[in-house]
Amino acid sequence: MEIKGCRVLVTGSAKRVGKEIVVELARLGAMVMIHAFRSRKEAAETASEIEAFAGYRPLVLHGDISLVETWTAMNSEIEEHHGGLDVWVHNASTFSATPFFSTSEDEWQQFMDVNLKGAFLGCQVLGERMKRAGRGKIIAIGDVAAELVWPSYIPYSVSRAGMHALMRGMAQLLAPHVQVNVVAPGPVLLPDGTDKAERQRILETIPLQRIGTPEDVVKAVRFLVESDFITGQVIRVDGGRSLRGAEC
Image 1 (cartoon, one colour):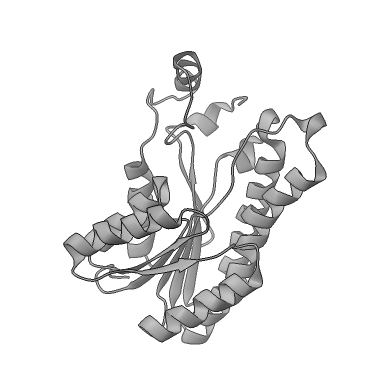
Image 2 (cartoon, one colour; image 1 turned 135 degrees about the vertical axis):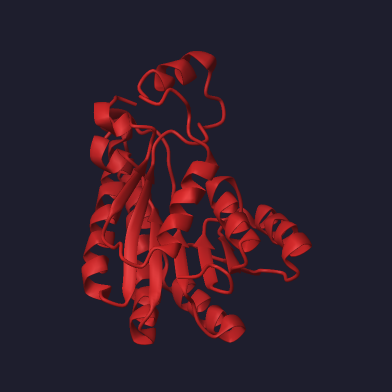
């Protein structure tokens, strides 16, 4: 698919990796749409940044992705403003460490609601739209934790594993006209507050000996948008970390 002119929604795109994806696709000529839940100020700033070089102000959508009402409302707004959707990059997620034996039911459910149910609802609403249209691409930003299953992040890892399975199923369901893939980053943009010792510990688990950057993820997304003979795949962008496995 040609990026220039295509209509792209990036969920969770107000800041961090999501922002880098939506900004780069806009630079390449896509008609982008920004989504955020709580980061409304950052979403407006990202829209202004894109408007300054792209010549149009991106549609900014808001809402909790764990609610079907959010997806149906976004679907309606996309139809009203752009008449359709060519690419959905699903980046929105929640992430935090959860010591297993003290993890509450509410904490567990939050991971399942945002990281798994949110993707499920999006696939029902936007996936059906693409199936009816007979074209489209879904690119989910996952995590190598789906396979490594870090002991300090078990609920998170389980939600990611479920999302990866969902996307493999969707790739079969939506074939042959819609391609569905996952980009699974490793250490990219370490959490705020990561100290020098922890950074070094993580670095030692990566064969390529560097922490990833948002640009590494963006390049994989661009590749999948432009490639029309890849579906049902998980592309690991982790510097080889998943070759070794590592506790986190």
